[in-house]
Length: 230
Image 1 (cartoon, rainbow, N blue to C red):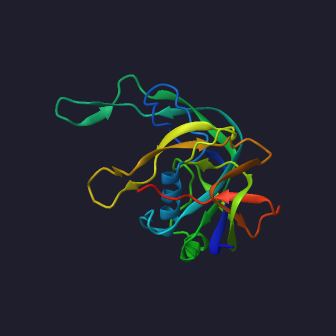
Image 2 (image 1 turned 45 degrees about the vertical axis):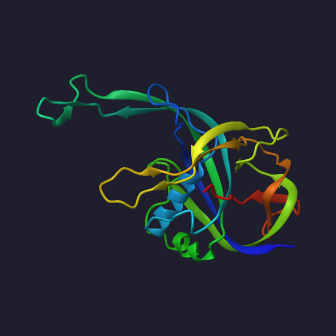
Image 3 (image 1 turned 135 degrees about the vertical axis):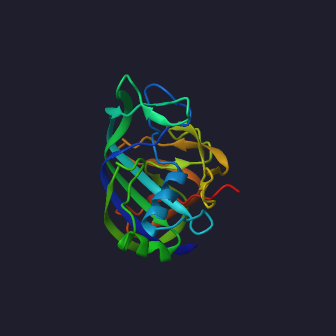
C-alpha cells in the first residue's frame, strides 16, 4: 500500500472566474473548474514567489452553488497618433461574463513545506481574477493512500473516461513567468475532463493516480493527484 504525506487547504469565497481560452470578445464564459495553471498561481501568490510544477503535485476539488451572469463596467482606451493611450470619447463600456458564485476549493499539495504559504500568506489568496478573493479556513497535514478506484468529486482529469459525466476542456498546464519584462511563456497544453462543480454526489471512478485522504468523511472517497505533462 502506497502512502504519502500532503497538506490539505480549504478555501471559500463569493465568486470565481476561469477565462475560457476560446472567448476573446463578447460575453465571457467561465471554465467549469480552475485549470492547474490557476492553482499554481494561487500557491505562488500565497508563497510570495513563483512556484513551479517541479515543486509539488496538486489535487483539488472545486464546488460552486451556481454559475450566473455578472455585469462589469470597464474603462475603454484609444491610442493617439503620438502612441499614447487616452480615455475613449464614448466613455466606459459594459462587459458581461458568467462566473461561479458561492465557491469552495479543497487543495491538496504533496510538498508539505508549502503549508507555511497558507498559514502565513504573503499575498491575498484569490481563485481566478484579483477580485475573486478567497478565505483560507483550514490548513492541515494528511496522509494520501493510493487507490485504484473510489468516489471522485468535482475535479479535472487528463484521461478520457467514458462513464464519467464531464465537459472536455483544453488548458495549459502552467506558465513560466521568470523573465522580467517578458510575457509569460505557455507550458504544455492538454485536454481534460472537468466534472461539474455543482454536483452534490460523488462519481465512482477507476483511473490512475487516485488517493484517499486520511481526513475524508467516507472511506471510499478519493481525489486525483495530477501528474504534470512534460
